[in-house]
Image (cartoon, rainbow, N blue to C red; front, top):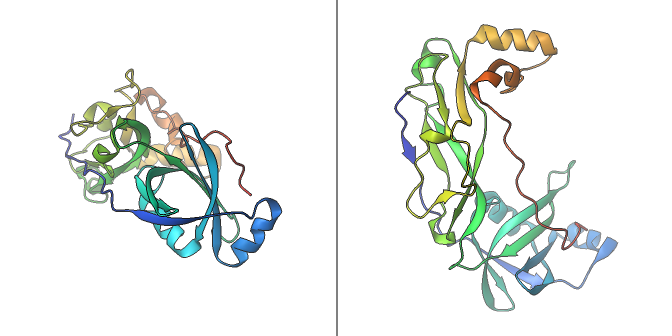
Length: 242
């Protein structure tokens, strides 16, 4: 097994976004979007969901930085509330935010969220220098931690991957103090990154008539324990995207 370098920095809590109460609902929210306003909803706990809105420029910046895992300080009616983005609705043509759902959280309560996995050293590994191909199989891991302890990402070095028998699995991940896998029965053999012979990927491409993803690469490495990454958890339908 290659030597693995891990880095996971705790999230900063200085991401903030000012929201305003929203009275416009239904089809009328189209007028808000034309004016550069994104409709949203804030929900969580026993509180009644609150319809909100914010400027698209600021909201897009926050969504880009926070993703679906970083805590955000929401400023609403002069009060600060800690939350995470639970879902984002994007315009498929214009690629603009259409709606955002914020889920409130308590800084003293552990939350479950997905943290991105970042492979470090792409293009510099021993395997790639030898002409092999390194592919990432899963891009996120679901973890549980207090909001302040959540890492921004999980970085794993592929530098020492050298042959097509080498791989990185969940067992190679060293979570920081205060962070644990959300699933106590997490499959530690789940493959995060694997090494392939170009000829194997070429054969997969020819067999499928297209590009082999890490798995059409699924057929190439099924015996290695790889499974597709799960979709991000979506919130309950407290409010439909309008």
